[in-house]
Every structure is written in C-alpha cells, then in structure tokens.
Amino acid sequence: MLIPTVVYFAVWMLAPTVYGVVLSFTESSLAGRVDFVGVENYVGLAADKQFLGSLWTTAAYTLQVVGPCLILAVIMGRLLTARTRLNSVFMTVFFIPFVLPGVAIGIVFVLLFQQYGLVNQIAGGDHAWLSDARTALIVVSAATIWSMVGYYTIIFAAGYQQIPPEITEAATIDGAGAVRRFFSIELPLLRPTLIFALVTSVAAVLTDFGMPFIMTQGGPADATLTLPLLIYNQSFMYGAVGKSSAMAVVLLIAAVALTIVIVRATRERVRRERVTR
Amino acid sequence: MKRHLPPFIGILFLCGMAVLTCVPLLWALSGSFQTNSSLAATPYSWFPPEPSPQNYADAVSVGNSGRAILNSLVVALIISSVGVVVAQMAGYVLAKHRFLGRDLLFWTIVSTMLIPFPAIMVPVFIIARSFGLVDSLAGLILPGLIASSTVFFMRQYMQGLPDELLESARVDGAGEWTTYWRIVFPLAWPVLISMALLTFVGSWNNFLWPLVVIQSPENMTIPLAMNSFKGQYFNNNVVMLAMSVLATLPVVVLFLLGRRRILDSVMVSGGLK
Image 1 (tube, rainbow over the protein chains, first blue to last red):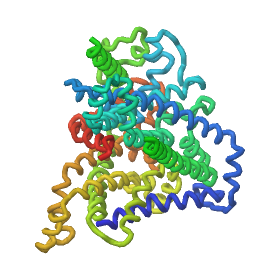
Image 2 (image 1 turned 120 degrees about the vertical axis):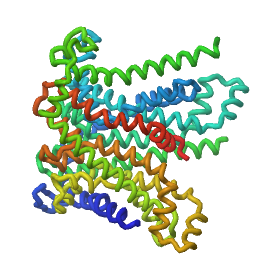
Image 3 (image 1 turned 180 degrees about the vertical axis):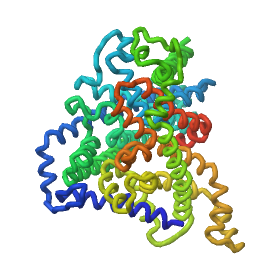
Image 4 (image 1 turned 90 degrees about the vertical axis):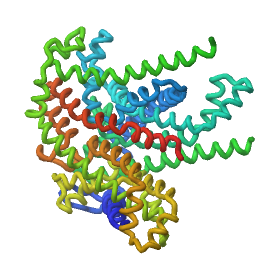
C-alpha cells in the first residue's frame, strides 16, 4: 500500500531534484546534449544582470505581497472572532478568491487596470498601469494579495479560536485595553499560526509563476521578471538548460533557507522570552 | 459607548473588504455580457444595455473552452480520486505500521513540500519525456498525482484512529487490504472528501506544469486555453471575461457545496492541532 507513494516521490520529486543539481554543472539543451562544465554556470550568474535583477524583483514581490497580506489577514481574522451572524457569510466571501484559477484572476486584473479599464474610469485617469515599469509590479502584487488574503484570514481566525478565553478575560480584568491585549497576549499566543502563515506565504510568493506570467510576461523592461519566470524563459524559450538549472538551484536553496530562517528566528524568540520570564 | 464602537468599526471594515473582494468578480460577470466597446465606456454601466450570451458562444467555438473544460475535468477527477486514495493508503501505513526507516521515509516525503515546482520543472519535463508523457493527459496527471501535504495530513489523521479497532480486525483474520477497505476507509471518509475537494481545486487551477507539458490545443486544460486565447486574440476582452467566468464557475460551485468541509480543513492548519 505504501509502494505507489514511495515510487511516486522517488521518480517525480527526489530524482528531479538530484538531476537538476547535476544539470546545473553542465551545459545542456532540452534536445539532450549534456557537457560537464563545473561551476561555470554559477560564476556566470554572479555577473548576469538579468538574473541579479530578477533576484531583486522576486524579493520585492515577496515582501510587498506577504507584508500587506498577513497584516490584513491578522486584522480580518481577529474581527471574525467577534460573534456575529455575518461571520460565515464573510468567511465564504473572503475565501472565494483562493479557489479561483490564477489565470482568470490575472486576466481580470489586467483588464481592470488597463488604460480604459474600470480602475481608471473610477479614478478618472488614463494611466497604463501595467505598461509602466514603476507600477507594473505593484499591480501584480495587488492581484496576488487579493487572491491570497482570504485564505490567511481563515487561518488566523482559526488561530484566535485556539486562544483560551480565560486568558484574555483575565487581562481585561487587570485593565488591559483591546490594543494592549492584542499585542501583548493574542499576538504572542498566535505565534504557531503566524509561523505557519509566514512560511507558507513566503514560499508561495517566492515561487509564484502564474500571476506575473499572465499579467505582464515579466515586462515592461523586466520589471516583473521574477526568478521562476526567468527559469522558465531560459529553459523553455532559449533552451539554456544548464544555466536555468543553476538558477533553479538558487531558487531551491532560497526557498529552503528562508523556511529554516523563519522557523529558527521565531523559535529563538520563544526561548529567550521563556528565559527572561 | 466605548464598548460598542469598536465592533461597529470592525464590521464596517469587514464589509469594505467584502466589497473589494466582490467587485472584480461582479465586474467580470457583468463584462462577460458586454461588447468590447461598452466594456470601455465611461461611465461603466454595470448592467449591460443589451445582454447577450454571444461571448460565451465565442468562448466555446473560438476559444476552445468546451474541450478544455472537459480535459480539466478528467484530469482533476483522476488526481482528486486516485491520488488522494493512494496518499491515504500511505498515510495509513505510515501511521499504523512499524518498520525500519519508517520515520525517515515519512520525513523525506514531508520535506519534499519545501521543493518549489519551478525549481525542478526542467528535470521533471525531461523525465516525463523519457516516459513518452509529453503532450498527453497522462503527462498532466502522473507527475502531479500525489501531494506530500496530503500524505502528511492523512498520516496525522490516521494516528488518531484507535489501535484496538485495527487489532481486533486482524484477530478476526482480516488481511491488510480488508482492514483498509472495511475499517480505515469508511472511518476516514470525511477527511478523504475534504482533501479530494482541495485537490480538485488545485488541479483545476494548475497552470505551470500544463504550460510546460502540453502543446496541442486538444490537450489543453482551461487555464491553458485562456492563456493561448489571450496570446492570439489579445484585444477580445469580453470573450476573455466569458472564459474567466466559465473557468471560475465549477470551482466556485464546488466550494459553495463543500464550504463547511473545506473551511474546516483549512482551519485545522490554522489552529495547528
């Protein structure tokens, strides 16, 4: 009963990971030519302006999606714990974007933000948001936030429900106001949920391909060319498999390292606080 | 007064966010019945002057949506039935059997959650090609059949099943398969359904792997069909909106039907039980 799963993970997860690392030390094409070149690809990346730019774009994209998304979700999740009959309606509405195809979301947002689209009609301007290198990434980020925020709202709402009401009640009796309670009690107790949300959202945005590809194809002037997009272009448009595999290894390391760093950093704080208490 | 003001502001804020969530959806729905000129008209009229289903007819005939939806359906149904059951079997064995290397195996599977797909898509493509899977529905299904998160979730759930129940089945002479099908499977039915729903949605929305592995229009899934229509007829916006609505409706309906189960299973990860 275990065999199909073991075979599946060996063939489709572990073998490709090992093979990808091997390919990153070669000069290869999709046609099957493989020449071993050592670390040449990695040395090339260090001087590759497009690659370095894509690292910057990926970091900016991740930060400007994860930050607002989680802040909004923490607030909305908190508000959803107040018992009103509207709650299940709110939860349903907020969650809907998360089940929609990214391609459909991307296309709708492209049309909303085009020169004669709804946003400009309401705002009364004629700014071509996605053809301007200064605003393109912001609009892509807005679409991504719109698609993700409801999921994390539900996650945080569940986290708040795990907090024993006695603790907050005790704090209220001791005279702590709502804001004080939120920062001193609820947020620290919410830490496991926060770590989960941070790890999963960073991983999702860092490796997101769909939204920038659909909305801007990486343009204008590479302003939305994130690392996954560059890897795709290099391997499937230009056939530079060795080079793109080196980029893929960088993405893999970044994803794993960020996860470890987030988990470590948050654990470290827990320990320190226990000591000071 | 001080006690009642914050909840009021809170609800107002939630209402504002709900409006922000709904506007793009309602605009897409309204736009799918407009013409390209009325879509760009200022001020925008939310109720089309002459609503017509023409864009939907075009989406099916020109945009290849019908065939693409059928493909998406086949792929998502197979992955969310076969894949989830296979993951459940693995979760059961990993939770309820002792053997050498079990924990190592389990954590290896879980750690693959950290591997981003864009980082391994080229080798996965090369392996799929060596199996002759490129440009086929089997090529869409096989490499994405089992999610490590599903195995993880199933194993956690199975650990909660009482050992006595499984032992008494064995004492009565039931083999592994009988135990699984007669006892574990019916007991874990609810979790199977919620995992299947989430897997269906994930497969329906998947874009990158289909983009890599599929070339012919007749094998395209609905996200791919939309992407290729966008490339060819980039200015036919109202048909794009009709395709978006078509691609969106099945998952929205599915979500509304399984709303309780989906939200509950998502909340489990938020409560981190």
